[in-house]
Structure formats: C-alpha cells, structure tokens
Length: 250
Image (cartoon, rainbow, N blue to C red; front, top):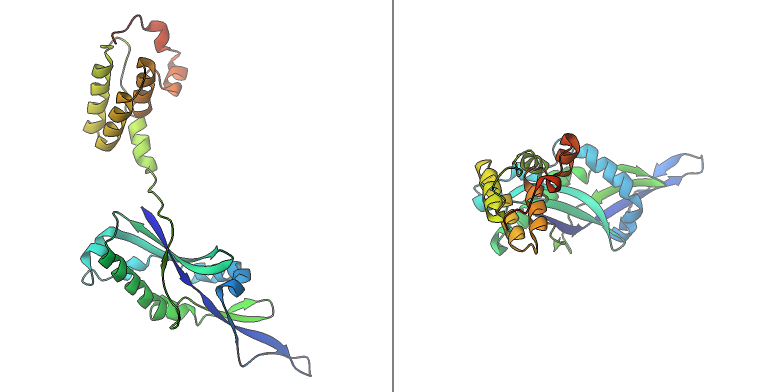
C-alpha cells in the first residue's frame, strides 16, 4: 500500500530592491511565507527539489534498522515532494509499505523523517536559493513552531504488470476436455498455483463460485489463463468454442 504524509512548508522571500543608481540589490530582511503564499512557486520549488534529490530520493536508504527493524522491513521507500492541498503548498512524503504500520512504528518513522527534514537533506535544501520573479526564495520542510504530519488517504497497491503478464501467458485447452465446470476450474487453479500464482487462483475460484451461469464462469476462468475463449486466442486461431461445444456437462 501507499500512504502520503503531509507536512507544513514555510519560506523566506528576499525581495529584489533597485537603488538610486539602478542596481538590483537583495533585501537584508526576508518576508516570511506560509504554504498558501508558496503555492504560486510550486513549479520552481519542484524543479530545485528534483535536481537536489536526483538519484537520491528514497530517504529509507539511510534508515538504520537498529532504530526499528520492523519499520525497515515494512517501509520500502519514502520520497519527499511538494503538493498543493486545499490551496496551500505542503510537503508530501510518499511512503510505500509492504504491510500496515503499528502506532509505535508510525511514530518511529515520523521521528526519523523529522530528523531528515531538520538535520538531514532538509537542512541542505533550505540553504539552496530559488530564483523567482521579484527575488530569491528559500523553502523549509521543517520548522520548530507548528510542525506535524497529517496522514493522507491510503492508496491500494496496484497489481504488478509482470505478474499479470505471467498469468495471461498460461495456456489451458477447453475443447476436447472434461466440460464439467468444477473440473475446468480445478485444472486452471492447479496451473496457476504451479506457476506461483496462488493468489490469483484463489481470486478466480471465488469469482467462479459466485458466477450465475456456466458461460460466465468459463469467461472468468479465461481471464486468468488463456483458453479458446480468450479474445486474442480466438482471433489468432479462428476457433470459437461455442461452435464446437455440444451440450457440455454442467
């Protein structure tokens, strides 16, 4: 699964000033900017952030497993970015997990990220100047006054493309075999399990058990293994199972 941890951003804006001789000087004192003020500079901040983190975006690469070994095992990546949320520019750390975190693990992860924002990469980033219209901007991912993380919506993990491809390339013939739906389902499930697809096999069986007719059950099976009913198989071979099947056993 994927979660997003939102945090406040602040900025220092040093305005360009033109002296009596027409020279541009940078103001000595900055304007303090909030997330709402920073929203207009999102593209410029994004550009510097991507350059600054180029090839080094996963903050979990520096997480010491001695700190909390279960966090290290569960969290595969934590990548900082910025995102506009309710008209304010926020820090957004995208965290990919293999399983949910406990309250203690969530706190340990957030404490680690705060350290990265305050004393790690964030300390270096806030010293990088960002040239924007009218002056120079410095952005802080951490501040000592009102810093907190807010958990965004949890995003389910998408199926890995290579797994889907592996399932679809498994072939099983229907024509000329036992037409009993449970026999067909058993062969398909066994084929999937033998090829490391126990999860899809279980999902397929559950869907077939809830199918309300024989034809629908066959088409569900044909989504998981290639049969004469799989569209591209029928197109390539010119075969149509319905033209060949005669009163199959139900």
